[in-house]
Image (tube, rainbow, N blue to C red):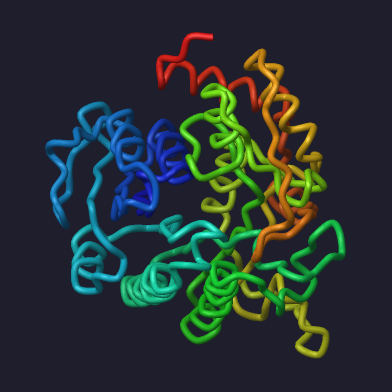
Length: 352
């Protein structure tokens, strides 16, 4: 297949593109390479995939020097004309949209970045898919959409009408926008609610990265909600396996969908929503303990209240993904944290 993967300078997009390339798909990667976090890490991910930094130009495809079936373009999804030209030129079979302005806390102080990337950018993706007869659009949603919902484990069959951050609201909006296009234009769409993804090449704004760096630098770590947090940490390899299976399995019209009961995870349109998580939530303090074990150092802990826009616990029900696509996450926290620490030490040249 010929697949457009957006967000390929980012954590999940980079990891997914590598797997699709290895199995023989023709992949075009797209990313704006914004400065939400270190652009050096983003360029290094691209270099790892054979895209040399010095050859990257705005709105121009760059051929990978490692993989004949991979090209990359630096482009903003908000740039409608350039995006539409790319679709017309490349004639993709499928699209996986992982590009977005991420981060719950950042959305409190930079709201317009989320509207530009997550709303304007996403409508451009939908329009491009509609007009170029894309066979399937898979896209990133987020576990953040559950907001005030406290019924555990989080189920895609339940309401998500009370988001508590603008980031979450944009992701909920993406799901609603996608359903509209599935209904009106029979565009198959699948939304993926990711649960706390971690692993090698991860995001520097995420807890594992922040904690590891601070402990190594003998700096205190901020532990929110006084440590009383639970997260469904999901290793990157498990996430990518799930996304790959979703891309390969476009949803169809569900003849059993009942408008009077309105299950929000499916529809009479070719539309589907999945949770994609580990389904084995971990206490934050246990997660920190694994980091301390691997680094051989105890963290200095700065206990703080729960932050605005954050939730104390997440846990994914992944029964639908297991039943429909055989998804089975298998990486334990002990293994996943060790793999991240090993990568971190190599990447930054740390001596323990």
